Amino acid sequence: NLQTLRLVLCTQLLNIPRGIKYLISLRHLYITTRETSFLQKGIGCLTTLQSLSILRCENLTSLFEGAEKLINLRTLVIGDCPRLTSLPGGMKFLTALENLMIINCEELNFSDWQDFQGFTSLRSLMIGGLPRLSDLPQFACTNSNKLEFVRISTCPGIVDLRTWLENASSLRKLEIIGCPKLTSLPDILSCLSGLMVLKI
Image (cartoon, rainbow, N blue to C red; front, side, top):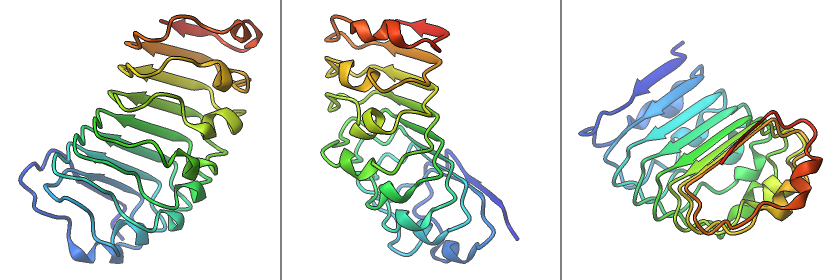
């Protein structure tokens, strides 16, 4: 019957329990471990999960498989994982996801952004501390009709926002912080009639 499990800032925790897949009622999971990768049949089996936070896993290089089973996931936070190079396969099936935060993952490769095309319910996107990111993910360009809040911080590779902003009709709040190569904002910004807060 366990619904919430917090293992945050457990910097000496070697790995999460092998039996975690049997927590069939788990809704909220927060993790800090020393693992380099998660169990193949672990987190991906938690079909009732609504929020998942993976924080300060300094040795983590890859996440879990089976993301396509997390059909109830609404919030995903990945932060301070400096060695993480890739995101889980099957992310496009996270159609219920409303909040996505990815921060301070210096080695994260964004060549697989196309796997995110299913993010049709996304309302909040926060990305920061991602030096390898050169453009906003394609899903934000095509499926941004519900996106209300976007924060882009410390992404030195970002140079243009035109393609993405053209479809961000529901945007209410936009924050751009620490993007030194971004030299201008497109004229399309004036068409965002619902925008209430702009922070640069």
